[in-house]
Image 1 (cartoon, rainbow over the protein chains, first blue to last red):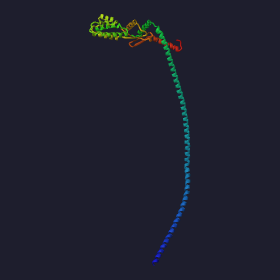
Image 2 (cartoon, chains in turn orange, blue):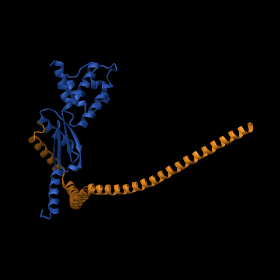
Image 3 (tube, rainbow over the protein chains, first blue to last red):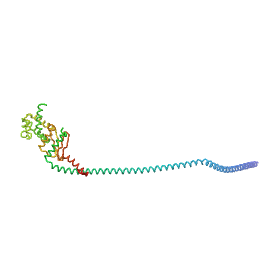
Image 4 (cartoon, chains in turn orange, green):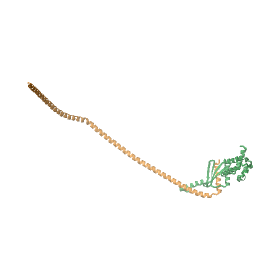
Length: 181
Length: 172
């Protein structure tokens, strides 16, 4: 009796286990199906997303192109203007530099001419002075020679009485000049 | 002016008349200083008596003159002061500097001294320098005034004129 009951219990337990397993299988199958549907759905969504993205990108590109087109033109115009301005400025600078160099060159030439003229003038002046000095020296030497010769001759030729007479005359002149006043 | 001062001045003139140049004056100073040595020897009498044989010959007539006129003091101390006063008087005489080209004779110096003394209205002494470069004439200097009346000056001017004419190639 007990064995029968046990077998019955065992049978019931086995049936229960099988039932549980069946339920588990069903559940697993359902889960698999859901998972597959999700996968398909995700794949579709991804594909749709890619398409959408591509479309969005194209639209954005178009929009950006539309927005950027005038900006680009303006930018290009500005760049062109700026480059033209730079070119003009460079030309002006170049002209100024050329003029500056020419001015400097002419200044240097003028200064050189001035310095040369000054040097020439100084040299001429020094030569004149040297010539004058030499002439004065020669003049002085000639005068000294003649003077010493004249002294020699006159000194010997003046007698004592003539000397005394000359002294008297000197005193007379001194009196007239009021040296003794 | 006191009588003694008058007497002294008259005596000084006798000494002044015996000198004509600064050289004469300094020689006289030496002689007067020498005479002082014969004073204060406890000997009485005049200076010439005290000097005796040592009295310089050129001074003897002058001392005789002032002694005969009674112008010389009698005492040693007053005689010393008298000699000092003579020296001071001679130092105070006006000096006339003259530069000559020749060595003048004594007689010529006396003549010139007389002329100069007449010109300045008092006894003067000549300070004579001989410089042959003046050639002739005289350089006269009196009380800071100096004038050249010399041949060298005239000759220099003539020579300068001549040399300038020669250098400028002009006929002199």
